[in-house]
Amino acid sequence: MSFIRGAVTARTLARGVRFNSSQAAPQKSNSNLALYLTGAGALGLGAYAYTSFGGESAAPKAAVQEKSPLDPKNWVNFKLKKVEPYNHNTAKFVLELPDNQASLMPITSCVYLRAANPDDLVDDKGKPVIRPYTPISTSDAKGEFIFLIKKYDTGVASKYIHTLKEGDSLAVKGPIPKLAWKTNEFEQVGMVAGGSGITPMYQLLVHALRDKENKTKFKLIYANVSEGDILLKQEFADLKKKYPDNFDVIYTLDKPSKGWTGPTGYVNAELIKKHLASPDLKEKVKVFVCGPPPQMEALAGDKAGRDQGEFKGILKQMGYTQEQVFKF
Image (cartoon, rainbow, N blue to C red; front, side, top):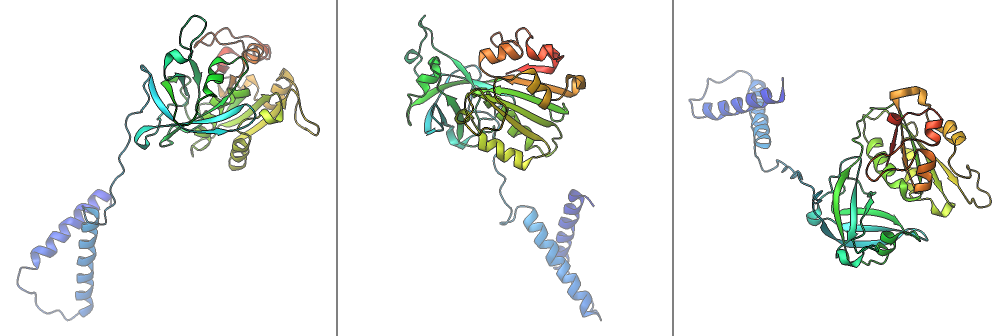
């Protein structure tokens, strides 16, 4: 019996009990057990109808958030709730979302950041400096919007953001959609990231791996200068432990410390061939790339603004096609 049919039956029987109670008492039964069962059944049905159709014990439904506090067409200022130092040149910047809302950002996407007062950060032509950033908080995280931002010596925006304190504000515009992720669209996904280019990879990994329907296997190659520059290392260790059949990560360092046993140097064809799925898998494999411009240029060709730009470099030489590679 379906839930709806069962509920209707319960209400009908409950009404029957109330209606019959005003009629003349039935003839005395020879079976006390039958009377007991009949009364117990009526009480049970009455209690079911009461709790199922508006009784005091019915739990209220939580309101569903339908609109994001972000705006893809206009700049919105958000207060900096917290600044947490992460390592020697990186910090977590936690923006407060109003009314305990979630960002509801699509996977995959980023936002643009600029100074709350656009005149506070301008380029040499007097125009506001605007940069794309991908949050590391999930799209359903309530009340917080978290960015992991590395301060680069030549990074105008990153150096400015690192001067901000709790209570200051940042202007946000977005989300800016990138690749629309579909569960199990690919059997194998390879990822190559460098430095702070890890954030879009992390956004996708957390979303995909916690999906109970996911069967895609992810392999990440993450390049950094030194071991101290590796971002989200503990988070990746936790993901690997929780999803050992679907995720693995390989670190390579330019300047390894004594005792380092992992790969060293830049990401090359040998490292990619050893760890990532072959281009022979055709539409079953996808490779994502994100990192500083020199790395992007060497691996797949740098992006052209928001466009993918020319496809070239190591991945093309290895036989991957433009359709198999996506540049974040």
